[in-house]
Image (cartoon, rainbow, N blue to C red; front, side, top):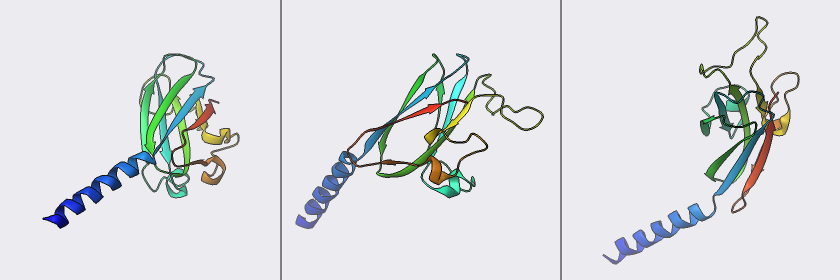
Length: 142
């Protein structure tokens, strides 16, 4: 009986200490030209997902666009390196529209604001989240 109580207390302490070390990330998306649709955000913690699309994002969300700047808060992130890619689905059709040459016609952006001549690598877009310290990233739409 004593072992079960001790184990329960230890598990509870670990659970609360794990939550105490998580951080929040505020993402501001700026330079939105048309107040409509959604910002479609995907956040990755590795190059396989960000660069190659081989793994799912650790966080994905659609945020309604109601102003020329949209703020998104991602809560309880573990410490580590992350990179974000997003686009403005202005016509709300669930995909990034492109012209006949395959170039985007809807706004898009990456953490680190790279990607002028194609998508940046994970290493170029990565930022670090540390324990118990909230972070902020600003992404300008292109």
